Image (cartoon, rainbow, N blue to C red):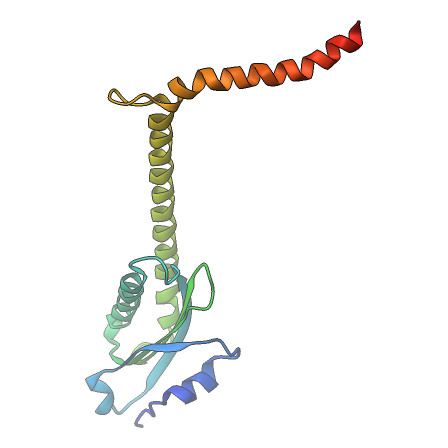
Length: 185
């Protein structure tokens, strides 16, 4: 039995219930697909990654998709077709929907391959964001200390504004205390 490769409109009708602004970003038909005659399975999965505004999101998405597709070739499977859609409408992440057609020598165990790998990618991205946050906070603290305490060449705001701030605090305290002292008499 020859597999029937569907066009983009047929995929959209089959696999998306909601009308999200999905864009086809990768459509690859492997050479084996034109000559393969036998049972084939398909797998559809979605995952989320960094938002499109962050640099490197395309590279990370391609690496994840390529890693997942290479996992499909294990166990005697052969890739026949790979389609990837992207939804950039959410602000804090980008949705991806991947459709794979592959030969099926061993059964429908393909979905089990993807779940652990996508979970590991999420952990790696979260760890990288935490490290970036710590580096940014450390840099901010160093800059604030340099601004307030100064450097060897330049005095900080603490030395120049310190006496002025003290005077302002004393004047405000006197404005608050004077009416109280007059009432106490």
